[in-house]
Length: 236
Image (cartoon, rainbow, N blue to C red; front, side, top):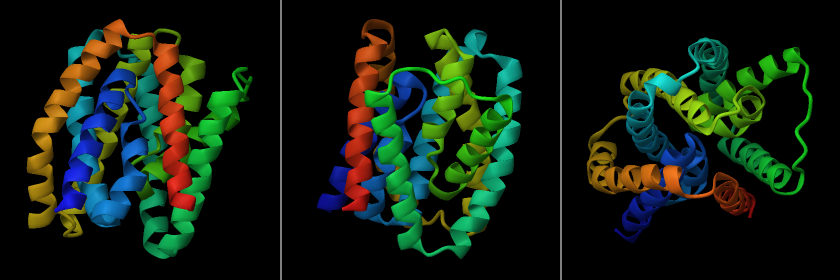
């Protein structure tokens, strides 16, 4: 019972960040959620939460979506997604969690202490999107690597957020169909999802207000600090 309450709070706070930035919500929630309700349950519930939040952001800000980049990102990440789903079925969970934790810590440290933007060749940018898809296929949280790409492509905050939102809508919808087919959507996950909808709605409301009022750079610093804490929790 206590784990469920903590999980609902995790959904609430992580989706405030998801609505504010268009990413990071599932990345922040996944490590703790896996420990609280189990890996498969966490993947299902957070996938649905991310899908709902992203659909709201995308539809509300459709005019800001960069359509050409949306197609490119979705296609390349979908290729990686298919690979990630298979990797998740083959590799041992402890190994995956360790790799995932190291990746999160590395990205958080990079964004906190290394501010200079790197010039990355187009081939590597393409590879980043495919790897982001692989991570998303395994843990529903490929946003960390997608942000590396998006930061070099989008200059406007609204364009950044709305385009990424629709990427998650497409990818998470596909993942949900896979999860239903694999029998991962059951009475337990549906109950957790239903209970989480109210805090999710409140989180979306507050996150949207913050998006228009708070300084983005300051809030991103907080996001990466929380991201670092999440990665360290997995490793410890």
